[in-house]
Structure formats: structure tokens, C-alpha cells
Length: 102
Length: 410
Image (cartoon, rainbow over all chains, first blue to last red; front, side):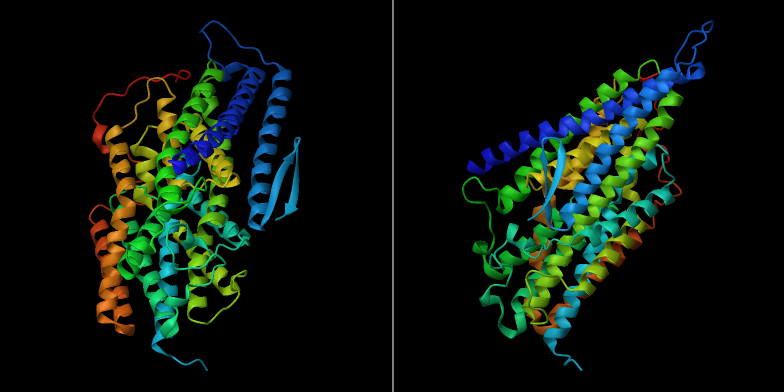
């Protein structure tokens, strides 16, 4: 019974953080794609026959900012794997990651 | 010059078998990282396995952290500090080596059988299963750590059964929500435009998965080989792994990944769900996030279960997409039976090795394993699956009409 509770306890934490990163980041990426399409105009969006979608330069800026944030998160993921590989731990003090030997 | 004693021969066979297991571990798990990228053509099949292999190799070298107590999760053949139990150390560690040998052989046979059936199953469950079986045969039921004490997740229940049940559920939920959100956010974006964008996202997340696989899985074999070396007196440090072991394991898992378990890649990429790039990225992000989070929180789970769960979730999250529950059900059955069946093979192998005794016993186990491997390879030749046909239409519904799905127009 203790084991089941411990598993559920670990499970919901994984679910919570996993949801935040695993669903949150791709959603941010999706916003980037949408901004990019809005920025490109033309054939990038779904439109009726007689409508021409005009490009918006701002779309690109927004898109690349969002992509940069996602890439940053992925790099953080890689850093996390590397740091753990070397037997250190990575904790998040506020937002900035702190690496300490175990 | 080293004396070629029977113990040394046994040790050499254990090391070989462990490397063979590492190899099957690699090709069994290529699918976890790369199946969706191959299915959506984000990467060509060849490029995908090459990228994955390189990252697995790099990952394996990154695993400096010592995993020498890997067997402690489920069986009692090691002390807490990683040294082998004294009672298994007589005759140059023969008792312990035979358990490792039989356990690894059981894991390999099960891995190959599930590969033949094209089913993704957990290599760590197979390894634990084989070891549990061999241990029960050698030391009785008491040799196995069935359940952890108190609230610390440990033993067969805490490290294998419970995470095995929970992790696919978590992954399904995360991937389902991710897929929903992605399609909701990108509605109104032309499908062709979506596909190209998300392919890049897929390549990034798939790489992340491959790297973390290399660090996690190669480590287990390194731990097993080092344990064998300690038991036979060839190595003494419990805080270090010999350099050659690290190199050998890294190369074994990477070459396995490169060979690619195409049968499994096909099932995961084409069999479960007809997958599109946005779904692929949602599935892979969900897998990467769940795997990395759980390793941070010390919650042991199987990469295979998470990745399969994520793919199913990405099918559930897209309106109109269908999940082939028949295929998913066969997979579920394989997961439930992985531990007990690998254990049965492990136990049988141990009995055979024990009854024959000495080096001859170990050679017999090794020989039986090779015969089984060759038979399954021969059997797989009847309907070969490789990079050339991995993306072919899934036969079961090739003739069914295509169902329109949400997410932009063609």
C-alpha cells in the first residue's frame, strides 16, 4: 500500500511537470508556427478563393522569439542530461539553473 | 599472461552476452526516439537511425555516473555498496556469474522474440525479468526483492510493476493535451506549412530522446559487466567503471541503434496511429518531458512505455484520428508478460547451466541463446522489414476508406 501511494505521489508530480513542459513547449512552438504563417501570408494560411492573405513582418519577429524560447528549453534539457551524466545535480534556483556536484 | 581458467572463460562469456544484450537494447529502442520522425518523413529512415546512433554513442560516454548497483533494484546478489554478496563469491564468483549469464540470456531471447513480433517492449523489464528468474532458480524466492520498504519505491513492485502501469497513462495524457493544443493553435494554418514547421521540432525532440537513451540504458549494461568483473576478481573499485567497458557498451548500443529494429519502428510509427508532423512533435515532446522529469524525481520508468503511450495519446488528441486498439492491445499484453516470461527463460537457462556445470554449462547457455537468435533471424527473413518498406501502408486497413481528419485543408 505504501508503495502504491509512493508511486502515485511520484506519478502526479511527473504528470504536472510533464504537462507543463511536454504539452506547454510544443504549444509555444505551435504559436510560433502560427505567427510565422501569419507573417508569411499568401499560401501559408487557409483562405477562401477570393481572399489574398497579406504578409505581416511582425509575425516573423514573434515567431522567432517563440522558437528561441523553445530552443532554449531544449538546450536546458540537453544540459540537464549532460550534467547528470557527470554525476552532478542541476537545481533551479528561481529560473536560472544551478549546477552542483552530488 | 593471464591464466585461462574455467572462471575466466565464464567471465568472458558473461561479458559477451552482456554486450549482446546491450546491442538488442539499442535496436529495440531505436523506435522510441525515431519511429514518429520516420513515419512523418521528417527524416529519411537511414538518416534517422544514423542520427540516433551517433547521439546514443555520445550519450553513453556521458554516463560517468556509476550504475554499478543496477541489480539491487530487483534482486539480492549485491551489497548496498555494490560489492557482490559473499556467499556467491566462492569458485571465483561462479555462482554470481551464472546468475548474470542466465539472466542476460533470458533478456536477449525475450527481446528478440518481441522484435520478431514487431512489438516494442521494455528492455529494462526484460533484463530485470531475466535476472529475477535466474535468481529465483539459484537462491529461491527470497533472493528477489519483491517490494520496497515503506514509502521508498523499490523491488519488483516499486521499480517495475507500478511505474509500468503509471508511465503509459501519464504519457497518454500529456501527449493528448499537447496534440489538442497544437491543432487548436494552428487551425487556419495551411497543412503543408504546418508539416514543414513541425518537422524541425520533431528532429529536435527526437535527438533529445536519443541522447537521454544513451545515457540511461548503456549504463545498465556497464553496471552488469563491472559487477561480473568484480565477482571474478578482475576489478575492485565500486565507484568506477573500466574504460574499455564503457567504450564497448557505447559501441554496442550505438551499433544496435544503427541496425535499427525496423519491425518495431514500423509498428510504432505506422501501426498504432496514422501520424502527422504536429502529432509527432507532440508525442516526442511528451516523451522527452516525462522521461527527463521522472529521472530528476527518481521515479524509474521505461522509455518504451512512455514513448508508446505518447504516440497513442497523440492519436487520441486529434479529432477524427483513430488509434488501432488491436495493435495497442497486443503491445499491452507484451508489456504484462515481459517480466514473467523473461524470468522463465532466465530460470530455465540457469537450471541448464547449473545441471551441466562448469564452463560446459555456460557454453551450453551461450549456444542455446545463439541458436534461438539465429532461428528468430531466419524466421524474420520470411517477411523482412527494413528501411525500404518501413513506411508502407499498414496492411490491416489498406483497403479501408481514408477518414478526413481535422487540422487544415489539403
